[in-house]
Length: 331
Image 1 (tube, rainbow, N blue to C red):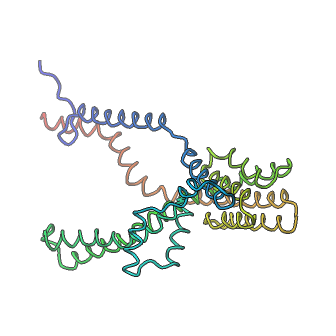
Image 2 (tube, rainbow, N blue to C red; image 1 turned 180 degrees about the horizontal axis):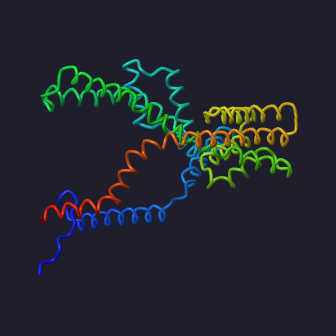
Image 3 (cartoon, helix red, strand yellow; image 1 turned 135 degrees about the horizontal axis):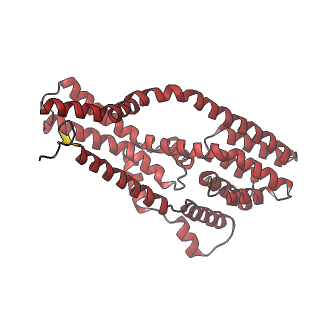
């Protein structure tokens, strides 16, 4: 007696397909477990950078040993070489360097030497990508069936992409960091109100908020902790608040900084002003969430048509189609 033929999908045994899908699902579960069990503390590197900033402020305001000062102000050899190359090509302008440093600060990168690396990347990346694309299509003849216009577009895309790649990388980090700060700003203002009503000073309140929100909102905790350090070491407290507004590319943070400066200057009640700002930012966050919820049906239409409905059809009609195909094959 022969065994009944097992169903097939596109000529492949159903058991083999089920085994492959089970293997993929098992691998995804293992990857998820690994990522969940190897979560690192996001504040470790931030605390290190904050300590370095504290040491720099101490070196600028207090007398320290010559060895410690030399360690703080020592130059990077690679950065000096890159700077000399850019100076030869007349590509290192002060305005351009300051703009790159500002972007890096907004992205959470404290090193000013990387601004020179970003400008150098704008020079080197087009040569590498554009030159590689030209070498591939014109010298090595990788795509001989391409028209000359298509080859030109490929090389132009390599040149433009190489020039924009460093800026796109930094801008992506700025967007993610700004989004994290925007989410935690209302909660931070509520905690600042509580600290102000409890009688804490402004720098102590910023430090306390940074400690409490460090794990939930690491980007915001990083900025508040750095502001607390600068409030304790800088001679002008206004400068510390202005540095905070420069480091965070967010209009809401600029409003907070303006409020803090006015309270420091005119002695107005800090708690009441921050409470009003917190209510406004919380309403803005709720309106943003409602706007995203209203756009959700239109956004889900395309994934529903492309991915969910075909899967349902395969699951529901697949066994019947396999049985009909096997019946016709047997007859």
